[in-house]
Image (tube, rainbow, N blue to C red; front, side):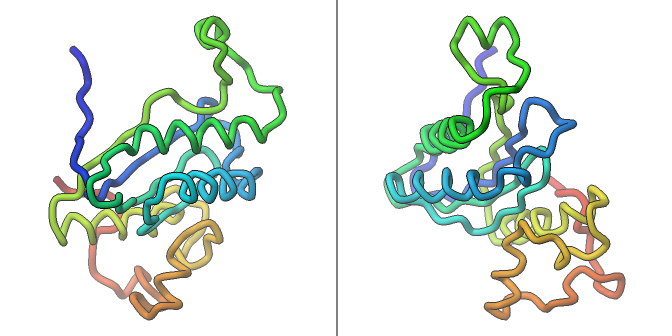
Length: 176
């Protein structure tokens, strides 16, 4: 069965992207290189990063694509390629990757989800910002440096104590 990705120009998408070796911390060890890969890709092929969190071995992000453009696979290809080229070549590379002249940095696939409505949007933004707490990296979402939560706080969209114990809601899992 062939997997079919959503293809809606100008839409908002949620993504989960993982590195190949999940026991490593490449994304935060080389966060400046990752930021540069995003920046260059956005300069060449515009899109808005609505929300993002970078964890050691994976990231979650919500993108708004330009009107009449649904080509997020090309953007992910560029981000992954630019990031990989910036890293030292010391990862384990499987035989199948060697045959295709691929690096062993990223998992080949990623998860994408087309945002359906305002509630879906809010749930995914909350999921992104709460993810470092869910994984046990910090006890409060605001304590994680590699998150757009700080932009949301600066803009007054959420408070500095967002998702503390006194806030009702389920920030750990997205309900379909």
